Image (cartoon, rainbow, N blue to C red; front, side, top):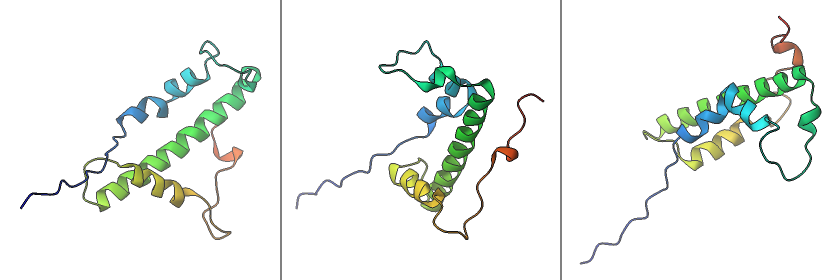
Length: 113
């Protein structure tokens, strides 16, 4: 009897995301030297606004990766899969008034200090 090949799930490692998560990676994405097809408002952003957005992005990605890692461990797997990231994204979305309050501008450190 011939064996039916089982479809193997495509595994995605978090390693390609790590350069984007850190501040240097985010700053490289915001660098005006990077070729961009259309004009971008980010060229006119104040440094404080840019730093605030970078911090928000880092916090969100850190929470996303932490949740995806927990889901991966729960499955007893060694690598993060796309399904883990999708479920983590759904879990991080606020669903009602009872959800944990999100951070405000006051929760982030003052860049001038």
